[in-house]
Length: 211
Image 1 (cartoon, rainbow, N blue to C red):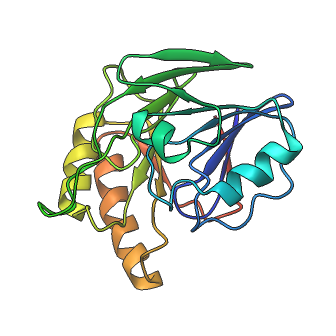
Image 2: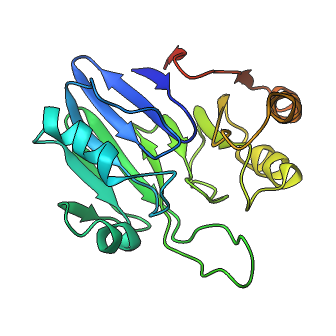
């Protein structure tokens, strides 16, 4: 597989002629020219992880693409054929084996309702927990690790990485950070990943990684 990072929480996985899209939200530049998309995973309902406009752009070119998301996404995107998934569910779409873990978004503040969120493990290799610190029940080769969010403290991210101990990791969910903030977070994350025997990749939008 090839992993291609896009802005913020969005990345693509490509196997042969097939592509899986994860979290195409409004902090990601328009995804207007994607072909071969067989599946779309939306981890939760917040707009930085999906928008109708992004889904329409993808579906217009890939009308048979299947869309997966938790119950909150099914409700929020009621005009789309979302396939509801929850903790422990699995699905196969094209050449991608999907396993879903977790159930709730990380707490932002006690005054803000906690919404549904699922993490996704793709082909047993690439894992993204969405906006949560859900630890998968298996060793992880490549982890998409969030580094900047209203719900996030970098110390918690470091503890999460120390628990998961991925072989490889790259940053996601970072568009709220300045260049200085990103570099600071990169350094902290890199230190934990490498201390646990892994390799950290400072991918920028447009960069790719062979999995």
